[in-house]
Image 1 (tube, rainbow, N blue to C red):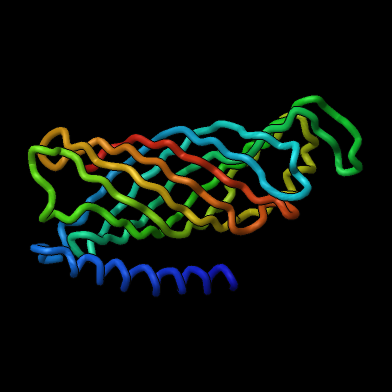
Image 2: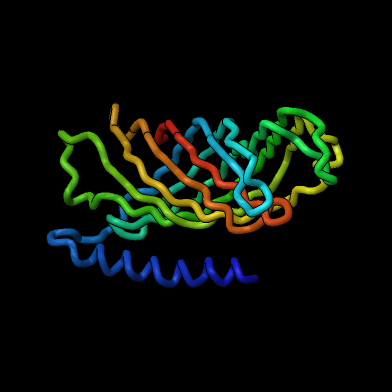
Length: 216
């Protein structure tokens, strides 16, 4: 409930502010452009944070997804995002629940289907020149992650039940589109998922994502 109220507050603050900012741009009509869709894929680097998981390090995985951006003005858009993202962490020394050393290395892979609602702040169309062929943007919002697969290496199978099925994260980042022909563009983007809810105990999962994609 606390996270839902936080989401509502963020939308109430962000949307009117960005709308006002767009209206203040000289020569910008603030007319929304067409709906854009695209897909992306890339690499992830994730790790656990929390007082009881200081020995855990980063693990690397993959990410693939698709999005639809609904322009509200020439500057602001609402982006709906659906992706499959691999998170988790690695540790050099693994212990059981009684803190008995069971293996020198261990790996926790947590795969999620992520649904994100993002505010997309981009360059106004009135300031975009065809010869530049690129358009930068910033992204920010919230994501619900539903765990669909767990892989444990170096740990007992019972550990799978210690991880929650869902988690909430704050997503923010930026990137740019480089137009290659017509309305088609290659996209480059960096995102960071900041864990808001615990995945196990007091552990949270933070993930950096490096993405490449294309608009359709």
